[in-house]
Amino acid sequence: MAKITLDNLAHSYYPNPKSEDDFALKELNHDWTDGEAYALLGSSGCGKSTLLNIISGLLHPSQGRILFDGKDVTNASTADRNIAQVFQFPVVYDTMTVRDNLAFPLKNRGADPKYIAERVQQIGQMIGMEAELGNRARGLTADAKQKISLGRGMVREDVNALLFDEPLTVIDPHMKWELRTQLKSLHHEFGHTMIYVTHDQTEALTFADKVVVMYDGRVVQIGTPQELFDKPQHTFVGYFIGSPGMNVIPAEIAGKVANVHGNSVKLGQAYGDLTGKVEIGIRPEFVTLTKGKGLPVEVRRVEDVGRHKLIRADLFGNEINIVAGEDQSISPDMTNVKFDLKRVNVYVNDWLKEGEAA
Image (cartoon, rainbow, N blue to C red):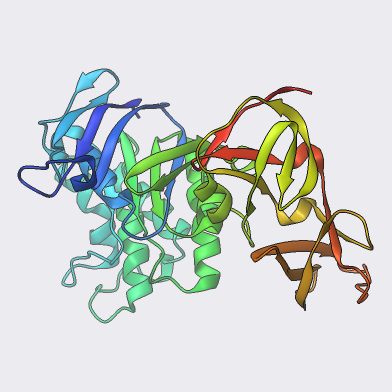
């Protein structure tokens, strides 16, 4: 287990990058706590796998350093970093049995045979493959092979970090939930530092202690699921976390009031002069459809999704989503929306702007 430090870290796939746009991974400076579980979350191409491969030693950064517990490992090999990595697609030895695949990392390090047998049995049970331990890996399904890869990554208890690069892509939906739960249980039991790459917010939010949201090669926010929901530090976080994501609406701000197309919206905090692209953000859960009070909207459609209703509406040319209770009746004369003023965030050039207590 190790504390992981990213010091002035950046990477470009170009030999001579000339501008920030040439960097797949913009400059990062972060400390990741020893023993915590992190999820790297973001859309395709945001830099998640690049960062993971730099941490593992598969990729050398263009600039900066990686430190494990204060020791510079930037130039150290993957083996010397003492990490385990599980990739998106299964990597197994087809000619070996499931048992031998799981035991391989321990045998390679000369572990005691009795310990190997006990540990392999334990991991086999965890991944639901006890009955297949004596079978050869050849001929197994892709999701079974990926379970072997996961098990082999977790079989060592002494690693500095466990790295997972979208490991559940080929796993069926029911098994995904089960394995995610087991990974979390393993983390609580052994306290490994875990880093889990995914583009799936459900995977990230249910697995990690802290979610690292990446956008355009940057870490835009690190926080607990609740922090990401309540206070998105960037409009991308608001959009990407939640289903549907946060409503973002152009506005002009004067003190404690936002002006939206000539209509006033009270704010929970006061703001000074704001320049640049100014917007307010409000989660659909904190928007209420009303009769004649608030901002005028045109309801496009109402979707009953079981536990609640999702209302799609138009607000001065901007799509706005509203979450209403399952039992709430929606009538044609409900043509306005009100916001929970304590839940309205203000953004300048996509970044959260903190105000003063009103």
